[in-house]
Length: 355
Image 1 (tube, rainbow, N blue to C red):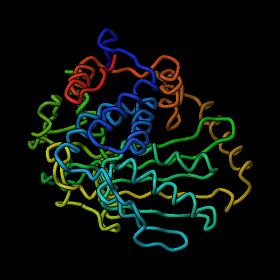
Image 2: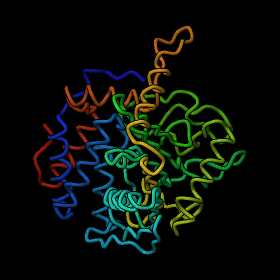
Image 3: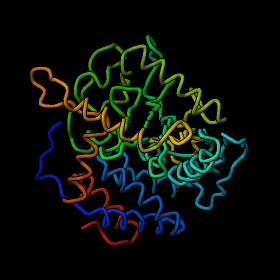
């Protein structure tokens, strides 16, 4: 979907972070927590995850105002062994919970080689890649899976909304090449893209959604009349189901009919489930040799022949990496419709507008 440049204004990451932090603090979140959340939300925008960054701020603020979020949480480990932990998020903002989980997983993986850390009583935490990439700084591979915060997908062949987008991200570091980062929903499009299209007055491409008669649905304002399509047909449905069992049921978190639609209900705790795995490369062999081999694979993929109509082969995460380079240099693009919403929010909170 092409964007009208005239409808977009750019802001530095520093300005975006400050605005989000001020909004969170004005709503009662402790400043230290607000800063963490703001930095992670801005990181999402810098990486090109426009449906998971500052776009989400009005919804987060509304949830805080309506009492659906705990601003004084005690995020703690419920159960643990050498290579695992189960974390109680205490209904905190999801970014805080998953940052805690990533830190625990990294610490455990230094000794155990691999660590799996799950969470319950969490909330929406932004794009999956945020957390999968955290172990990279410690020469580890990261894998993250989450339960989506609203059901927009039926079982294959059904029409009852029992599943969500249930995303997965895997991040693998290279030596000189950018990390290879897969970040994908189990649906053709994440629901955040539907919401951003609606806000911008854009149509959805055919293939994102169908209505309950099986016909293509391209008006994002009518998304409630249909459902998202799974990737690969029944294969995507199967992945969404299994990820739900691992991130939800295994952790004692919500799944299936128990999912709270956080787009419609801002009061009920969502009991969101997520998990992160940290894999210590050094436990498997020499770190530098592994990263150099990743570079070789990266270059091999890039040098491979292309089909007619394709200029180059992309690796997972490469286009996000290019967006990051652009946005670090030129600022984060904010669509005018979102800017109006954010500045109305600023007025209601008594904080400076985003200008």
